[in-house]
Length: 116
Image 1 (cartoon, helix red, strand yellow):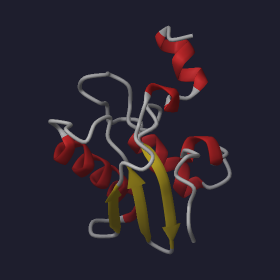
Image 2 (cartoon, rainbow, N blue to C red; image 1 turned 60 degrees about the vertical axis):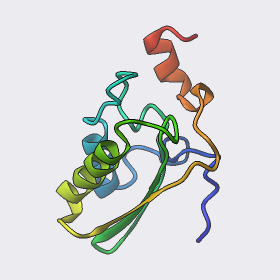
Image 3 (tube, helix red, strand yellow; image 1 turned 90 degrees about the horizontal axis):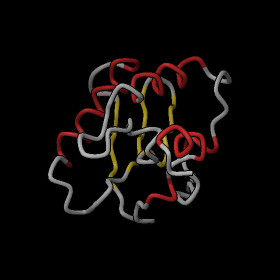
């Protein structure tokens, strides 16, 4: 299955439709970008979460290809998903297509932080 990464996971997924996914998202919302101080899910860094059986493929991006905490954030995301699915059951992919920009922050978050 090919996912259009121009449409963020947070824009495609309807909360409450999958308890496992809700738990994963709750865990991801505990990880904050240390420079922007918004959680990685609501910041728009999570492009896709594909869960099959007890494993997941997570596609994410970073705010910059030169992000000084890239390894830290990717590992934190992986560990957050593993809290739900178990250690070793998460495959991480980092992409810069499309590149992240402030327009990827969902409108409700922009309202909360004063960008709208």
